[in-house]
Length: 482
Image (cartoon, rainbow, N blue to C red; front, side):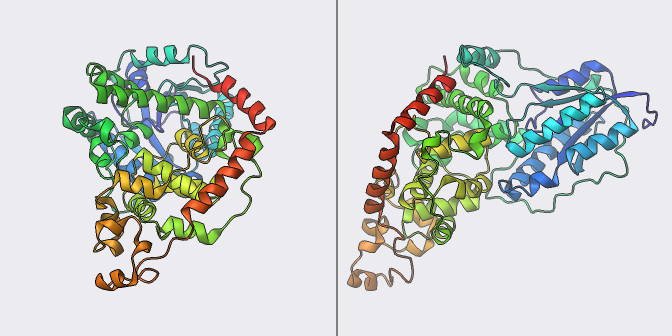
């Protein structure tokens, strides 16, 4: 029987980026509180309309929620999909019920969700609502010093994994106010993308330990082989289908294996960058090192459009952009390379293409995204300047052209000796293969060698400056792990 009295206290579990039923402190709390509990996920129009959100993200979230819903229904519990701004929802529900606790996980999100959380905290305080925000993946909010951060992170990773007994959760139904709309996802499911949900997350983690990890270190940079040899767990971590703690403990018994050990080191590396972003969230908009603020001031819409569409005339770049568009995944080396190409060879400011990549990456995580884009654009002043040569990487990492031919169908019949640099084919060779460079496939939109040389000169001019060096020292002092 549903509740109706305003004086009856309820708890609310607000799922955000913790879309799992195992190792979930919010669920553990309500299994012990005894209060009637409302389970919600809020699809906020402002978030959906933001420039870094894409239907592929919403689809993954929706699939994850359906997985949770299936589990909850076994215990006569409901998960509600809300369609409105979060603040409006809590204002409406607080007029209907007396809310005692709201349970969620801290969101290491973008500026939009951070400002939303600040306004909601203010509202909760005005209504004497207790908001319990659990720590996410060992990230420490409001951290003043990185001293002993690694030690604290390891302590978190080794702490107890929670298994909630859903039978103890109060099953008294809590109704949503009639003024609140439900969210109905109408996009079709796409087999080209990894499916969301805790169930699939465990399938991926088990298959990686069982067999796929073999060759992880060897194939991590290869665009084709990495699709199998890499863990492919990143979207499941991003949306909390798995916690870092679960992953760490699942693989820790096999840490003597070199491939597993290398994988675990990247798990910590991931959390390090999320901590860095939480400590300095303005990197979403500003260069980490302000000495580079005016270095790229020419926005070329046409060049970036060709880059986005995979029509640059550089086969490996085009293959990566098309693959990313159609599957939401690229391995780390290829991600670094396409950013390097846009930032150095095209000489475009990272702020002009960061949102496009955010929308395309299925595993988009602001804390990783902005740190890495700035690093690969060489505007931090503390990292090695790396300008990836796409032809060199193509020859080394896709020697047979397998990856290129899969995604750039115009080049499917081109022999392997020209697949990496088709513009070098003679007219006679083009006729032999019924192929015309400039017609069937574009000429390169930029000279790789010339643009690389010019970019290096510009970057190093700033990097050697006293301003850049002074700021870089302060950056290292703030973000170094101890």
